[in-house]
Image: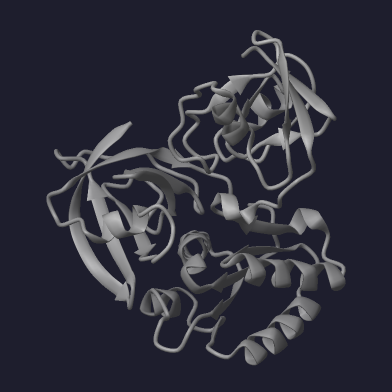
Length: 309
């Protein structure tokens, strides 16, 4: 855990604030892979935000936060911070890295989804990689436009009309050279549209990368049973419900914080069955071991799981 101080706050666009966080002694922070995110303890909740700034030996972390009316109040809490306030932060994590062997990077952003895309674009510009950027946003709500224009003066295209974005998307997907990788972040429906269009053009799954945040990004899933070995009970997790919710209803308390698969607090062992991992916490080798899962978001590939609870 890192205890960081808010050193600067700027208004990136209406409803979006950019916060700069640094160590109190201004010492260097851990470097990170472009496209990484931070997990912040935001008063009543724990939220993940993409890092915007330089990923090499950073002296500060920068995030942009869209103020949401719904949710559990994390974005509102951050919008109420002032320079000098302390924030508890978990070190950067990467679930959306650039592919170094890509022939070209096609970066597509919708709304606040521009934040990890900006991180990718900053790294691509440094390394001299070929890029193309499509950014769709509401009129007057474009975020970090000046930086995007500086980093991609010839390949950035911005759209405030859905029809124009869709036309440009189709045109762009159809003419990319083999070896291009697509990176997309934005609202769920936006990303679904982009991915579906890419698949229709024959893009292989391995060249399509998305950054999806939040439990709402997950599909309801299929029902599965969980054998509570120590309790000698069996419960059913219905579609749209989490194992964590079912355990709590059963009277079994599991430590948890974010309930979105980021913080790792609700990790529980698995003694039989194969989990369907949907979290952002476990490393790939930990997921491959199939001996634990984040019960807030993960489900089962098999009909049932057994846990020592």
